[in-house]
Length: 244
Image (cartoon, rainbow, N blue to C red):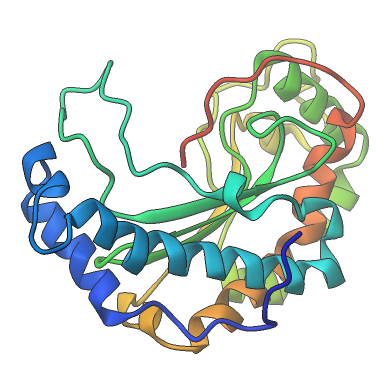
């Protein structure tokens, strides 16, 4: 991995302004036009490059508490181009910069991960299992069913509640088939997603405080993410796209 600093000074104000302008002009003509420099080049300079720098700095920090989730920084970045094939919204570009941090021994969209997104409206920090395949969900539910106390210990403490709030995600109305309604983890087993997310004031995007805010939350949520990934390690399966 390319050497990186141990911190991040924040996004340039011009980068956040670019994303704000993009939201008002979300079309190919505006994005590829501009003079004397095409706006696509401004995007690379003011948004993508700082986001890559943030990912590199986060990787350095994660070597301390989540080394298995440190990989190639450029692969962590999501593309700015939206998949509009099945969406009524046909605007071509995302108006945020975002990145995903997943376990090296798993495919990118196969297991639990850490996520961060920067936009003019808010900063989102998230982690968990967002869009598991049926096989992955079953494996995780089985793991939770026999280890309910251990699982709860990864997220029911005061620190996690203060930093990330409560466990979220889509749920079924009944305990899934194959699991007992009397299981101590019955309510947890109803989850189809296991997700925590927290939003911060967008003004922090341009502040050095942003880096510490993300690191603190990633650190606190590492036991939760690793618990979810444990039953998936060493298993091969195809997972759907995981676009937080």
